[in-house]
Structure formats: structure tokens, C-alpha cells
Image (cartoon, rainbow, N blue to C red):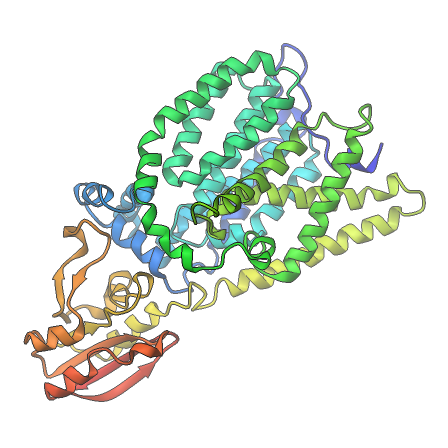
Length: 519
């Protein structure tokens, strides 16, 4: 058998008249379940360490709104994330809104994606060894380990995209009845779109599979109906996304499509991880091409084509679209990460079987495969650890801010926040994300709390205006300043001094400063 064929046997049709089950291929459902639990553990472990950051604080406060308040907000901002917020509302009602509780649903989603990778590879004719390797690599690919410890919907999109393609694979191969399969595909695609709109780009991989499927005529009508149903169902979220596109206008000022961002940042995080992974991916693609030139030995190509389109078509399309609309960010591509993990596993497997094709290189091929796998485990391990340091999320230190204030402030004292920082840096979010340290303090600058507003955040006066309007009356005042941009100085310092306050203690943290003023 050729190295390419051994590297990844793809879609294998089940015996006529008897759809194959996962267990019928030599492994029961315990394998994907066990690997899925491994994926949950990898993403969840240490997820409580990094401080919540701006986007996660948005998830936290939005989830804590009533459904009526959430609906009011969705009519003005963040409609594209409102399904996720609604799900999280149900979650936090039961489990609370600690950093671990908020992030754990994403860890579960990462595990679901890992389990889906195993099933997808097996249903595509891959061996247990290949499927296990692909699932393990999915559990540790940096984009998944990051999304799996973030209180946003991106890990969920990875899970949904993976299982969409599991269902399509099962439908095309006869393991799932056509009507059930395409109905389920439409439902999952709509769910993915409401979790995050870009998940719709998974349709590109389905089109690729349909275009080369031997039985495409039998499925074309059902697939067309399924796609039309999806399109009809997602009109509201797509329309909302277009109308609210100004929310990501900040991407106009960021460099998101330079070579480093695309080759490293999208999936791999670290240059060393990227170098090893890309080498394996290139080898996987070469192995697939070689296999296609030997049709008697190689696979039919649906799986290979689907993987390449799933992984690379969505980012490529969005990068090209940057000419007209800046809507690309590495974080948005989490739903393509499982494909990258499978391609990487395919490359490693091709190395392992190299000796079956080139005489005298069997040991060398297996050593090379072991070295590549070891290098990935080690380098992704360092990335995983780095993602779980206290300030790993955008440099946020709000957990530490709350701890300092909670340790030193007394009930009845006033607290003020730097309102001049950007949305994701608003120091007021430290109180919303970690309210324990601010319990009993008077938020004297607040004019309207978030749950009464059409946007996701509070409305509040600047420190200067709060002082000038006589709102600051306590003898001790706590001020939380953002220090990321020194150009604006210490907001409100002059007004506080004019009112008779002077700084007595200062705690300089990672990106914020806590100052105690007394009169």
C-alpha cells in the first residue's frame, strides 16, 4: 500500500443495505466519548486563572440580564451574539458567573469538537489510530485550547461545524438516512449561524463534498432544499450582522492579515508550533495528491478535499473580502481548527508509513513521525500554559483589581472608574466581572446600569464630571485607572485635588492602577 493511501483512508462506503455503525468498525462510542472528555479537561484545566477581559465581561453582563433586557439590547447591539448570551443566561442562573463557570461551556464545546473529529475520521474510512491522533491534536491545537477557555461562542462553532460535517459524511455514505441527514444538517447550520454567523462558511466544505460525491445526483435535491431552509432560517441574524457591522469597525485599525497573523495567529499561536504543523499539513496535501494519481490504491478524495476547503476557504474568502469590508479576525476562525488538526494528523501518519513506500526508510519515517508528534505536544504545551497565566486575556488584570479593592476598601466608601478607556478596557468592567471586591462601595458616577440600557455597558460620568457635580462625598475614594495609554494621564486627578482629596496609596497592577484618595 502507498504511503498516501495508508496516511488517511478516506470515505469508505458501508455494505449495501446495511449502514455501518461506529462500533461496527472496531471501536465503540466509548472512544469518542473518552477523547471528548480529554478535550474538555485540556481546555478547562487552569481556565479560572486568567482574568476575564472585555469581550468576556460583555458575555458575563449580557448573560445576567433578564430575557426582556437582553431582547432590548439585541435590537440595538450584539444581535449576532444574543443566542449565545441567552444560552449563557440559563447557565449562569444555575452555575453562577465566576471565571471558571463562564468558561466551562466553551470547554465542553471543545470536547464535543474533539469527539466529532474522531467520528468524522472513522466515518471517512480512517483507522482508529489515525482518528485518535486527529482527535488528540484537535484537543491541543492552540486555537481550540484558547477558545475552550474563553467565555465566547467560538468553541461552540468548532463543535457545530465538526458535527455538521459528520452528519453530511454519514448522509453521503448511507450511514444516516437522507431525509434525516439533510434535515439535521440544516438545523445544525442554523444553530451555528446564530452562535456566530461565520459558521455558515462551513457550507463551502459541504459543496466541495457534494461536487465530487459518486452519488451526488441522489443527494442534490435534498441538499438544495436543506441549504434553502438554512438560508431562510438565518435571514434575521445575517441581516442583523450587516446592520451592526459598525461594531467591528475597530478591525479597520488593526493588522489582521499580515503573514504572521495568517500563518501563525489563526490556529497556532506560536512560530514553532506553526512550523511543525505547516510541514505536516503540506505533507498531508502531497500525500493526498499522490494517492489521487493511484486510483486503485488511493481514496476517492472527498475527505481530503473537504478538509482543505474547510480549513482554508473561509479565511481565504474573508481575507479577500477585506478589500470591501474589514471583518477578519483570527478568533473568528475557530470553527476551521478541527480541519487543521486532522490535516496535521494526516501528515504525521504519512511520515509513519513512509517506509512502506521507500525501501530502507521505515525506521526513519517512524522516527520522524514520533519527533513531529513530540514537538507538537511540547510546543503546544508551552502555548497552553501561556494561555493560562493571570494576564493572558488581553493583559486584563480585573481579578487583581477586585482583590486589591476588596482587601483594603471599607463599606460606605466611594469608587470611581476611568471612563476614558476603550470599550474593552473600561475599568468599570472590573466591578461587573468581579463584583465581590466592590461590595458595599458607592458607585457614585453611575447614571444608568447596563441592564436598563440598549447597549451592553453602563452609562456613567467621567471622574471629573462626577466630582464637579458633587457626587463624591465620602472621606475615602477609590479610583481605578487604566494605564495602558499614558497619553491621557490620570483622569480626574486634578478635580479630586481641587475637591480636597489627595492620594495616600497606589497599587500599580498589570494594566490598571488602583489609587486610594482621602480627604
